Length: 402
Image 1 (spheres, one colour):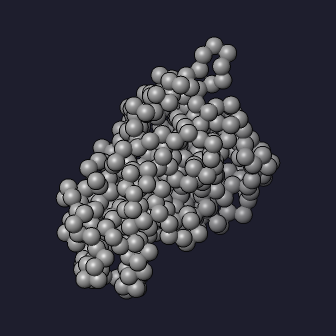
Image 2 (cartoon, rainbow, N blue to C red):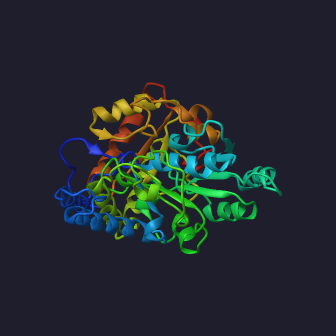
Image 3 (cartoon, rainbow, N blue to C red):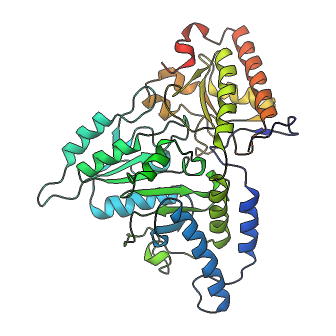
């Protein structure tokens, strides 16, 4: 849904990769869940009613990705889902851990001992390097199992899709287990994107998937880990044995119902409309002097990572915030700090890693507001150029990442 209306009153929200606005269907589902008094683990009538609703949400989440309902483990969010996968499929099974160099901190900080798989200048996983790393860890007779490989379906800062079918094929060849952080991709699926294609052709049938409700337009504080099959998993939170012993704690019924409703709505959306608006905005930003990271490869339909050469991200954020626009400098998981992007550093962008902002259009973006932002961005760039900060001489390749 892209609304072509007048610019809304108050701040204009263009930071959907940090969190999407709550979808009306998700709100309605949550209210229905909040009306239930029973604990889904209780055997009386009130508990059974809550259990039915929880299992309906579980079925919705699992079937959307080709899994059986019992393969869905509800969590408190994407970070817990990633950490549970690292624990259950990695350390508990004695596997070495390999992660993409541009992974989210939910993976990076949960596995500081992991080996980094390099990416190219567009942010795409280097499959030749991955193959060499896997060959060094291929299990032999009596050896420990193959490594755990953790790859994002789509990067949260640049939107760049990973070559999941190639990665999955390499993992199968070398006896590795694949975990996919699908937090950004799952609620923005298009038929032709790499994540959808990998699901459709069965490439990810043996992989686990991490999901997060609020990146789909659901509530914050809910997520899921989808297992490749119904199997035991060493829990991080043993608790009372909920989630078939894989994650203790009373399920957040209303939040999980909201997540399932948000996912269903996201799958009905025509993302090509948002992509066209994104492309239009990129053109304005490039004309103003920006470099678009990952411009030459497939990306999420809503995401722009734009470098304004010579201008610190902090200065850009402050200028745009004063004008009433909510954007970010990358991940929103750093306690409000603005730091150099490890994603762009891994892409070899050097100083540009501290000069990038992320614009991520929400599911309900208003075309008029987005176009107004483009005008404000161009004026901001013009002001920085007038102060001698904008390095226009460094622009090459029509705004592509160098």
